Image 1: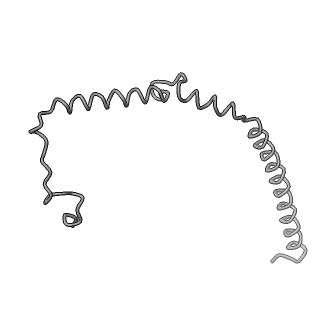
Image 2: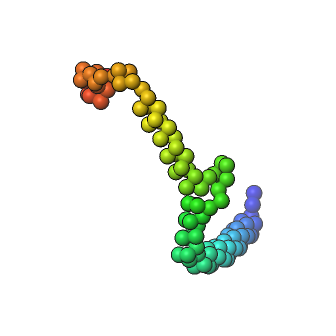
Length: 109
């Protein structure tokens, strides 16, 4: 069984360790906060604009093309789909059937 002296020593050590952790935590938090503030302050409007320009018309890659390439690809796919639809004879399109409309509440079970 632990004596009062042993219990007091354990409590004293526990408080000491908590104070040490708190001091280290405060120091690290202060350092990281200062670092984040400096980084944010160094980021200018011009930097933001440059990043946007880079994402729009920059180098890009095969896996991550820039936005202009992405828009061109979407445009080409859309134009191809429209051209293919124009080739479909009108009689192949289904006529509207008011009794079989998927958006009515009557057909929802």
